[in-house]
Image 1: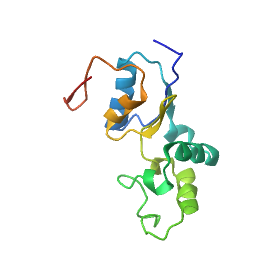
Image 2 (image 1 turned 30 degrees about the vertical axis):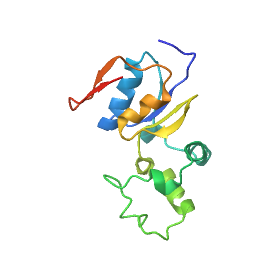
Image 3 (image 1 turned 90 degrees about the vertical axis):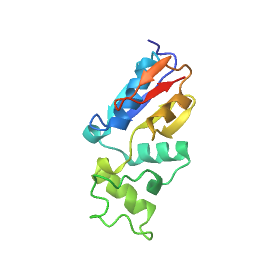
Image 4 (image 1 turned 30 degrees about the horizontal axis):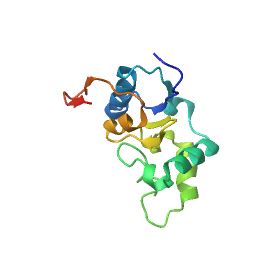
Length: 136
């Protein structure tokens, strides 16, 4: 395992996509920093930093499925970025996952294979939870 190439994953252990991304990182030989954002929450500064690094807007990473996004009225086009960020701070689950940060960039890794573009080395073979084989 290496620490020379830092990897951080903002992870939801209940999400298959997030678990697959984490497993791919580990299969490639990395010991990532794993942040369970549902437990620790977000800060405005961190969300701003991640969004800037991804070139994304809050709406780009707003998770609708399985969250209170609709009930909070966040799906309307006129809802401001600031309002979405405020809601994400109050309800961390509103941020889609996993977000992975490495020296090669920061990305929302959906599908989970997106994580491979952020790693220096790849796992030789990897099979996702659903049985799909990912070979590099």
